[in-house]
Length: 117
Length: 114
Image (cartoon, rainbow over all chains, first blue to last red; front, side):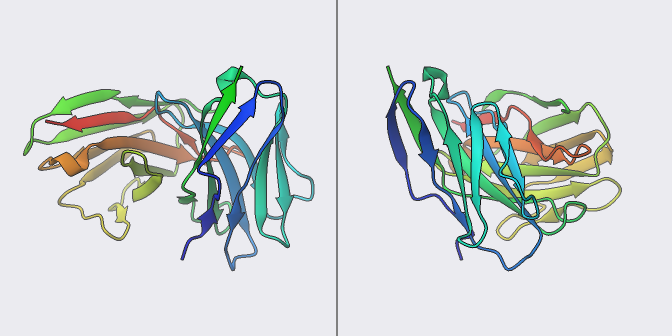
């Protein structure tokens, strides 16, 4: 069964606009973690933001914020004031189990974000 | 956050040969992970490498094809054996946690098979 679902294969946004990338997840664990990574065309995976299942506040890192809605099992990434350099693939991923335990990640299919000037 | 160095960054190999990818972390970590990303696809975990024990392989991946070494807490290698065009992918190593920091990735190895 698909554990991470990203329903937007591609997104096109005007520069300086905010953009929301959707991610829903499925797990029966109470303890889990959600990640967002950016992958430019060069191929490296750049960590953006992390949300733990017990974190009460939504995570924020600069222009990135994670809209965590636990009851709906969604963890959307919000990028404010988009820039041309934000054009890339974006992956949502989940770690199941406690932080000190299993660390393997399951990835969604990704969303290709294109920022238009 | 920790630095993860992966090499080579890219290679072009002949069918039937093998390629060994190295992953070096600048601090000691318990777990290291190897992922494969086929063209246009998402990342799929190949195996988890713990120091001092055999790697744990995910369904669909076998040790004969993807032997892994983990000689110490900062280093691991992945070998892709008997290369075929289907092995053309980006291979990424990952490690963590680093204190409260979650997993980070190396820059990846882009492998093409002639």
